[in-house]
Image (cartoon, rainbow, N blue to C red):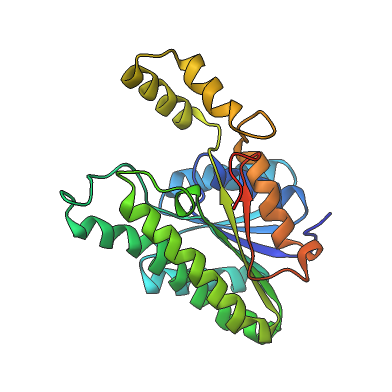
Length: 259
């Protein structure tokens, strides 16, 4: 198994990609530390992992709180003695007013989670990784950092900043044996995306099937990846298969676009 003996800490463990990342890492033998604000959902994912023979520790966490980030890492170390991999998956997003109308406090709030929250948690983990002289940090980014759409300015800007931050960390932390990479998903098939396509169909006077087929036809592989497919790329970066890879941003979109 690719992650046997490793402890993987995942933030933003919610329905969809967060859960898929946790399940995929557990399947490959990792011990999981699950972090998010929703205590009940964390407990369900931890139980799901346990029922499949894995090990998981659920720690309710707000990554915007320095105290919470510190407590999360301390809980992980107390239980498992190490943190080998950090997956920064927590985010805040959504459609927002155009720039002329938006209250810039919204942008600040988005940056607080997507950039500063993720970096705050990373800083807490790095203090331990430096001592062990190894580690892998994976930032889950977004196609919004590559393809700009109106009404996504705050979110897209935060993800663009996070891409550069990840590369900066790769340069600075490599001396300690710590690798830092990003994955950049495109559309991820889910109930939420289906709802968005149905809304788009109504707005455009088209059928849901027409909208879905139009988007799908733009991908080189002819399909929209699901969260499990995205999670497998996280496993790659978490594992020793990518031991010579750092500072990279991997687009995972079935060939929807090429950087």
